[in-house]
Image 1 (cartoon, rainbow, N blue to C red):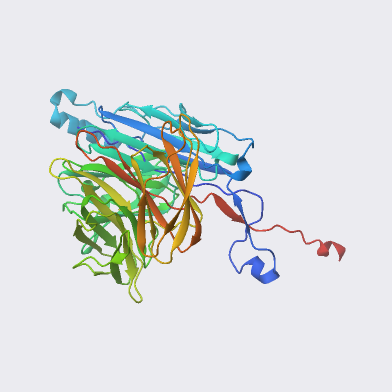
Image 2 (spheres, rainbow, N blue to C red):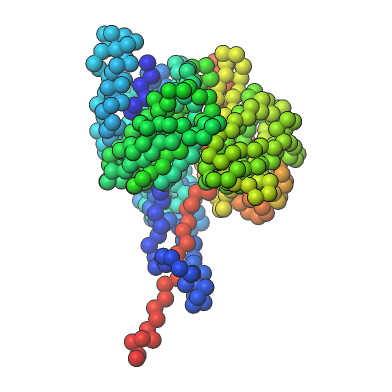
Length: 517
């Protein structure tokens, strides 16, 4: 039996540089007094939590940590960024559930259940300098969750990728996840409670005080009654994993999960495992918007399923387009999509890409309500199928980075839903050596450009890829990592949201005129 109770997912946000005075509420001081506009400065501290990767005895996990090299950082003094082991989950009920399940499968295991939480504080990975990835690997089924911080020049854009290859069993395949920031609300379109699939939501509290969250499920007829998902207590610095099928008595294929914090802030993610289709992590959808972009459907996708939800009180009417390498088309039979308020709608798009990589664009028609959305993408056929997810992904304001790219294994998808855009793609030095290389690409309006990132000079080990917007319209991006094994098309897809490496800091000026009165 696959033990999932020690899984963890969450992250803490990058903190702003404290170099000015922020105004709270009211009109902008700059607008009222003519003061200078805020200056964007690099963040000074980033904190991240990564999940306990798996309990499988036939798995290997690679952690890759990276901070992009900035011009101002060259030759500057930096402090090491560290990832440390974190304590395991505090939810005793989950351990008991494991014990009962183990006993049912094998009476000799009765009463054993989940193992004790891991001790916290053991260093696992240290990043010494920007511009060069640091890696660590483990094949332990007891690998703990990780918590880490980066300060000074290592903080802006610091990212950590966790990549796990599970060779066999439920969820076999490639599981990839990028640590993300904590918040008070997360939407996960595309979860399931049907037989043969196990979806666990992992809610993490990174702070020293308890948090309380509600787990809400929405189907085609609206919200589903799930009393056990209300007021879930998440103790300080711990994680609570919940099997979604325990929240409802009616198995449902296409659902939307909302994780809402009543108090405190949390990190959240869903680990989906399918007996036939493998598994992966499902990252939360970007903020609800009348128009959304889901970037990076692989060219050889054999099945694409869209799940969308309207969180608000009004209905949504959307135009559906597929942005391919030469332009955008409307999929036959699925040109438009109507979603009622508070409800979830699923659409099976089949092999919509027809051998060419693409991205799905959902555009508001008229006064449409904001939506959240995600795609379930399947590659392969028969007993050689594998699944990954693509959530709605916001545009890059400045830059985004994804770590753990492998030679010949990574594909970058860039989509410009509106105007033509130019982007600069930089591949870092490898974890074991080599030199960085950059290349500029033009993404034509309404198209998806799928490219293999430029290979670092003298490539040695995995490398990071940073995408920077140079000019033009909005750009959305994702990365597909493919590590095929024994005929199984193992793959995972990570969105590249903006890395929020800078923060707006108002000008602080002293007014001494009152001292002369």
